[in-house]
Length: 310
Image 1 (cartoon, rainbow, N blue to C red):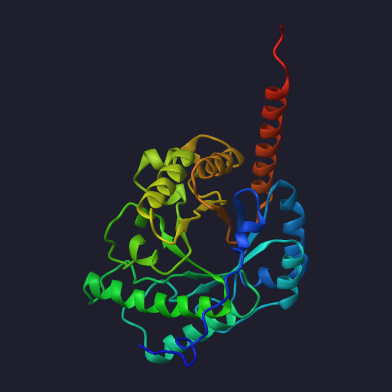
Image 2: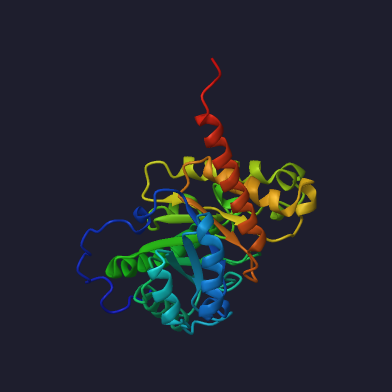
């Protein structure tokens, strides 16, 4: 396994307040792809729309599709910091998963990309597609686990060097599976990362009518199972929720209510919060859902404050 010069001999970082400690409530986030994430005016528009309803987290891609070329608009990072938005840089490790172990050259490019991301001003480096393909691969499950752990170990060293958080995106089913053929195991990731992001989109539990039709149950169950398995580890959970229309019809509710149900469910757990995924950064319905929650909570608080009639 390739070791980048300087990673293992770096001086341990000084202790500092955790970035998420800036917020009194849950992390409420959105994902933005690499092209939209470099568009300062678009990012400003999303923040201005979502921040009044609690938006405080944005994850931004740092590379084009299937490439290790680092792309970033520093003005976006500066703006998000000025708005007190928690920022994660998403690094796609192996697009669509590995069929075979990566070459030394590919690993070198990956580690360099992780280091550039850690040094760029993000609060967190978020690893995605750190897995094997969901097909036949010529390795034992333990071999896959060991290989992924070596990469996580390198990423952890880099995160520590720059005093940033480390996160990882996992298939939603991994919170249910103790051993999964893609090589993702909650307990292994929890040795190295601070946050695990299971992609618990209800729409993707195909063939399972209960989870397809009850988005709140799906998010709450998956998040709780993940948290239970992380007890006593350094890691917590922050699920990805669904902010796209695929298979919403199974739930027999509006798209907005579908999102409301997921948010309510995530925030009833001990998770750090949630992140909404929409590949086109179309979040108007998400913000409408967040506004509805805010109004409902305000009405409930006002109702509770009214003294009972004597």
